[in-house]
Image (cartoon, rainbow, N blue to C red; front, side, top):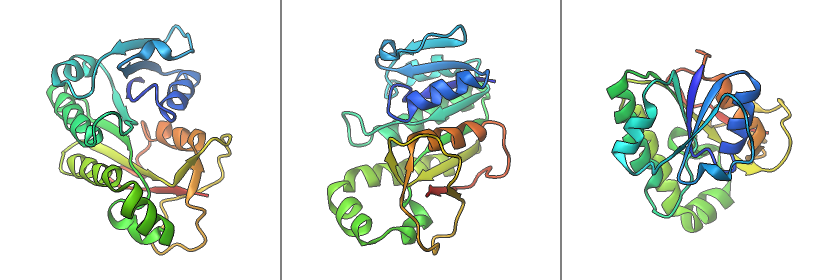
Length: 207
């Protein structure tokens, strides 16, 4: 497939780029400074742009089969929601249907899966703005008519790709580690480009 990855230079985005290329996909890495990616590959195109610029996003999305969104908080508190709104508009304009987006465990109906630390300290205080941005981002996607999958991973680790984790669990699931490696998250997201099991659903990911 021909896929564009927004947030390609982020901690998850780099795994997404590497894995998509290794799987034989054509990849466009969209970022403000895509030149920082160390990987070189015949199927890799770099696209310099700001996700907060609707015109830049619209131009970049043209001609792709799927869109992967792995945006970080960036320099503005609502970059995820605002950037994703621009991406959704661009996809509608060009008739691109498939979107895979990285959100966070705890968003929406998965809030009950969190423990006290994440509910009260992390998302309740320290990461309140980021959590609100994730919630708003999900609202933008869920209100669209796209073929989307919103992935809700636990806290990121730098561990290897294991392929052994829980996915799509109920909010009442017990004994969740509430963490997962970026590599495992990237692999799950790549699979959703063609999979239909989680279409228009919000699977959580955790060890």
